[in-house]
Image (cartoon, rainbow, N blue to C red; front, side, top):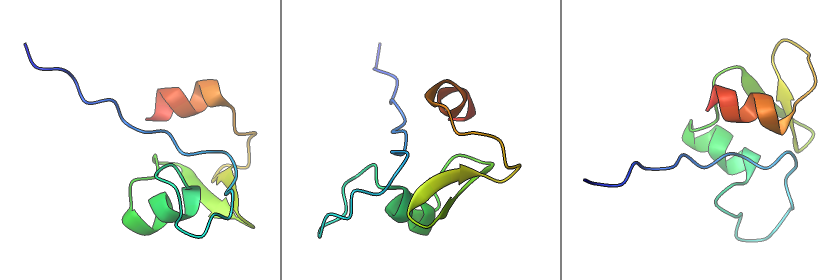
Length: 62
């Protein structure tokens, strides 16, 4: 009867806030909580295979 924990999805781009929000791709990369197959380049979330990042695919990966 417990609630399933919802996994946070990263934003597609870092907002450059001073304290780094919970969904920041840079923070998630550092913590190792970024979904498999994704990395960050120039503060933007990118896929390792070079395909376009979409929210639909991101949900499926997480």
